[in-house]
Length: 592
Image (cartoon, rainbow, N blue to C red; front, top):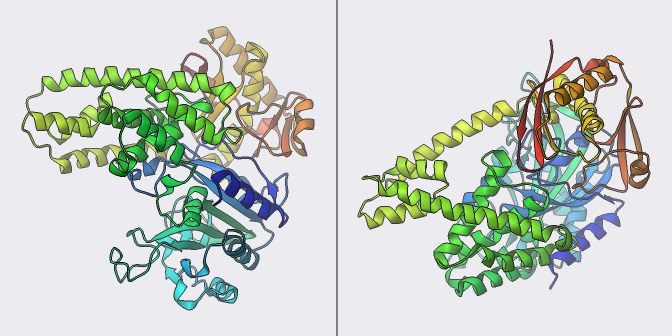
């Protein structure tokens, strides 16, 4: 039976043999993509290239991408959902198309992995008033030997892929297209636990999606129409953990070697069995794994954005541990963290560099959570009636888990209205979603003029900060909207007013000089030797693109950029913030 590491390598080797170049996994938090909090799919870091920018490694690419999907937090606990997972991917940037893609993925699943053909089903786009039914892919699948009753058609909610959903949901400028998914069948229609009307996209657990070939044919226009892209792309994504479960013919992904050693440590800590506590142990395993990955990239728990999600993961995992072992201490989590490092050592994690820091961050957060729980208990003791709104307020204000509030209400012989709690929670989600939409409006992925100007300005700002504060300064992330530029960087104290003014003056001086902005593809080692800056937490392919701004700035980047700095316009630093002991944040706007 293949291990997770063997499966990852086998996939990459297969596509390398078909002319693809391996690109390294991008970070979970993309430094230059303000359109989302986390990398949720393999195509996300590829957006500029799917829209036509040349990739330094060519038109055939493959990788295994670290992904995190915050929307799946509440789903974790069943046998297939995870917040952190790996997405195997391959891309054709205007090169091959449906015929080669479907034939290769079928060969990989059946010949390379030995998955029985009779256990595989495929789904296709049924068509709508904008785009026709995908008969072309159906004919390809049939020629490959897929029987007619194993080919299924669905509408755009199931078989159309873009980052934002259906054609109606896609924002202007976003690419998308019909897709063809592959499902693995773990049972038969005659199995009593499955219904007679069971189909690949139902939720009974019989089928598991193990791959999705997206045919990026269209781009959303300002009038809402779909225009065919000049460059027709293939974007494939297949969940590594799910494919491994199919190989093992066991629908529980947590029984694969990417999870099971961690589950065993949780069993040892709690002195309980997985078979009796599977949901709670899956949550602990998944949430701690995702947390370790984020912290290893430099993220820390906070009350904002990515840091808030990290805090939520750690507190939910800790709560589940304390429920099973009330006397557990923060130090008891070390054995689980060590095992997560062991599973991914040399792939995504390096214990010699990161274990101590990751362990310390998790211990501090768990201890803080324990104090929060104690504080929340004192608040609840003063409340006569615990209702759904109180339960939500305790969660949002103190991070006090719903389950614990429910238990305390039960002790008071009170019943908490779950519908009221859900209504408050939905209200909060709608507010957050609206805020996120506003925050990410005009994001880098749409290549809008203002955001492109701001993006080029981040290069000037990065170099100016290093000039003024020293070369220990490194960019730690950015967020660009049509209204402002936000820039995170490593530094251990607040900037003095004169330092801020010097940085601002330096950037504006380079803008006024109308320096040319040029892009050059070159080997990574040569780029670094030439003085180009790179994100120190990010892995790069052997061939990279270096953007040079006059004689001032050289940086590895994927674009887009203005042609000359005068196109940016004058900027002003309006605010600075602390993000912890060693991170700062600046906000800049254009001066009209």
